[in-house]
Length: 257
Image 1 (cartoon, helix red, strand yellow):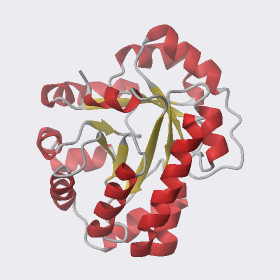
Image 2 (spheres, rainbow, N blue to C red):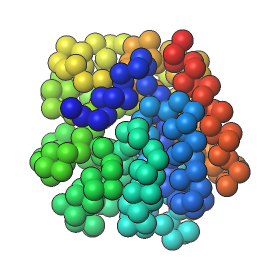
Image 3 (cartoon, one colour):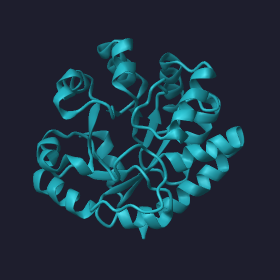
């Protein structure tokens, strides 16, 4: 069974995202442990990339800070190994195809699995290019997470049928970032997914408040939050840990309803 499924077994899942190495890897480690302790069900670890096309300014700036601080993919693998001595909940990498290609697809995926990563999200890889990564992920036991956007309408069923781990439903068009309101008909997208697969789906892009998270999880199995957390890291750096813990707990409480 996919370890990712565990994240969705205790009711609605809360899935926080963090950019690795912003402001440094020791802080990232402390934040991950705190999020795990405060109610996160699955954690997305962003591997920084110089041209993160799906990201808004908040996460772009975090990528720049992390890279200028000297973070490398190898150092992130090592950090995950160290985290795995304490953290048992599922963790997935979110990064870009170029990061994986330039490292060597097989080498990247095998080392990610060895470090204790459960899945991979590649926002710039469309469904048609899935075969470039899916067989290698399968070989090493990683779930390649599919993304479904509001524009995917006629492709939703096709993407859902092939999905593994969980499905990442993109709530809004454009890039990541907090939004004052989300207008996409999430219920409609989730219904099409449900007609094609029983794999859980979680909604991300734009969620920042407990109210938004509660609303989205009326339809979906989980809520994903990135920019609102990365903003706290930008503001407080190494002092962001406990505040992020409080935030994670408030979001988890909201979706428990």
